Image 1 (cartoon, rainbow, N blue to C red):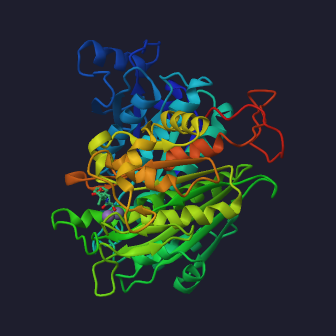
Image 2: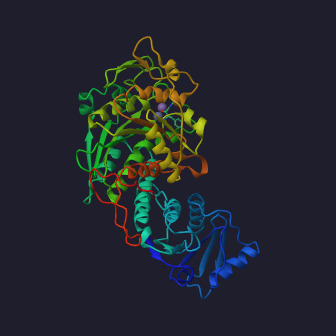
Image 3: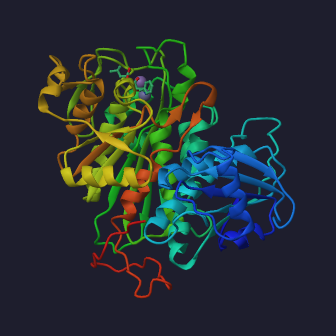
Length: 511
Ligand code: BES
Ligand code: MN
Ligand code: ZN
């Protein structure tokens, strides 16, 4: 699907040649003199159009509307969040229509800077969300007519950088969704590594190295390898690099949990819903999504992505409860529950991250069922040893409509991890399970500022709407772009793109 940005007021939108016109109408709507706004005013007056976000009124019209099909959609208070809801609802309604070219008009909303950037990005995100359809392993994919979505705004120039960012984000989110959704026999560690390598193609600035089992062994990643042992699929350690700033600039390291299927191992999981453990590589998929977006946007920052990837399977060779393994850090770990495998692969990746002398390390993992109990599917769990990093991630999550919530790391929570036979056990008690998992990881993060995102509740949806959400690519991208030096345009109508300029920390990017 192609996205275009066009300067179109309401009258010009009505006169624009397309197959369907979506008009977002906020509660602050006031009618002008034109045909379209009298129609809307009448529909509101007669209570046919409700302005609550996502409420639809579909019309089939003749002149002066060039698009015969018109979808009026309530956009609530016109905030980014409600605009996303509105755009998503309108595009879902058009999904099975024959419309090839759709105009989504934001002309009735405040698209003046700076609020306009957030509103436009939310509209793009909503449309992109509705536009994603999984088809990779279906023999007869549902036909999709939609080819182009035009976003109509009052003034394109000041919004162009935000629009480009939103399009890059949409591509990154789609990639994360696709790899999350792929069945576990189509997303093995080897295939995930191939997906990472594919990000380096076509003149992309992304670089990728994939370490094999022997190289992982040579590094001393005994904890990661203990998990991998139970599977005939060989493990992979994926290293992605994006360098947009000077070499001297410390990188931010993203570490994504890449368990391509989690049976629990010898501490095997119950059968019900075990299929959803194909999503146990969504942390890894979010790292791929971020690198996809970075390749498009090319901001002046350095980022490293690390993905330890393997299956967690029961087998004659599998790690057993009670086994003691030696991590790359030298710390020994008593594996009391082989289903607490995420932390066992992440701890070695965190130790590996030390070599980059990072600005910060953020790991992203579908780590605990306990986090789903604590926060449900709305906010990801955030843990951090660094208050300013935590604040920045929280702010990025809010801005990207991909929110998280900070949970504590008091040392008392680590009590249960004590072991009589190793330096640490891989599980504590049941209570505070998301936190004890984070406390385990924290032992491997002494050398850098660290944050951990537990996305067990937010990375995918269960039930009828089963599917990957692409979260937290939005949060991570907004956080990373906030690190980039920005050139503030002198003339707002002629904005310059973010350019690499080492050492200058001007204003951070708001959009
Ligand atoms: N991948 C799971 C976490 C998970 C479970 C995410 C269910 C989403 C839904 C993880 O590897 C795991 O199995 N964690 C255990 C830890 C426990 C053994 C301490 C859990 O949460 O039950
Ligand atoms: Mn597990
Ligand atoms: Zn797992």
